[in-house]
Amino acid sequence: MHFLSVADWSASQIETTIALALKVKKNPKEYSQALAQKTLMMFFQKPSLRTRTSFEVAMVQLGGHAIYYDLGASPWSKGKESIPDTAKVVSRFCDALTARLYRHQELQELARYATISVINALTDYEHPCQILGDLMTIHEKKGTLKGLKLTYLGDGNNNVTHSLLFGCSILGIDISVGCPKGADYEPQPSVLTQARKFAMKRNTKVEVSYEARSVLANADIVYADSWMSYHIPEEKKDERFRIFQPYQVNTQAMSYAKPSAVFMNCLPAQRGAEQTAEVIDGPQSIVFDQAENRLHIQKAILLMLLR
Image (cartoon, rainbow, N blue to C red; front, side, top):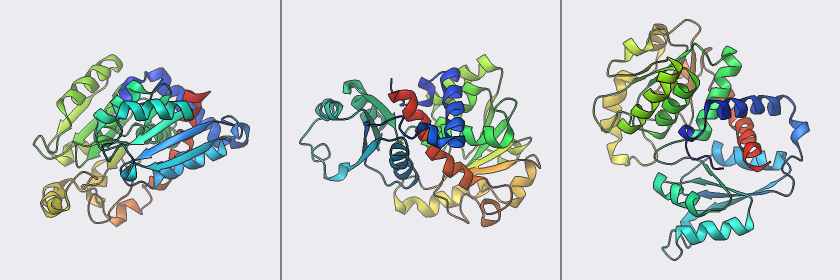
């Protein structure tokens, strides 16, 4: 079994993984040898702090071992070895493989030829491990995942937004995306179509609006992400900051949500851009609890795939 997309897992699988993560977080010593003698290969094309660290620490604390491999100097990146050959070789050495790649299609090809579990550690299309950790955090803070509304403001055409759309709609959370108009900024149509199919089964809502204030009404969770994803050229920064400014999460924006609303950002975050310092460092922010839970959800994902 692989974990390439939130959409690939059922509500039951996601709920089981979150429940396991909460158990592991509460009683880590019970799992200290759960993956003894297991090895995780970690392929990275993009920079990483939380994903790399949480996977490495997770394997150590579960009794296993992780190998970090920078693809920049690999035969694969130099065009001297194919993705299928790479997948087949690593499958002979390791028990699982996690990959942080620019192109989602390359991750899918890697999984097609691997005979071990492949985990999406972020691509241009999705960031599923992040969103399972986010859902775990929401469950911790709200005591449930039912009957909630999450509002995302900012760049709708990014991996975090896509995974949030899948995760919320599968588990029965209303999700509203406030973003600029245009294909460069809105969630991909195929993602919206699939998310709305999931939402119909749960009798919940998936909404996209070009007006930030309206989507914030009754929000239990307000979520922001970087306006400059890894694939965005630096020369577009000024233009994008101008376009996204109306979607900044500031004190006024938070006032439109429920008084009990929490603020989330998957990090890294730039104060004064997607959110102000008053919000991310304020009492409604749960971003560092959210970051910590990457470790616990990573453990649960590994246990689901390797035990």
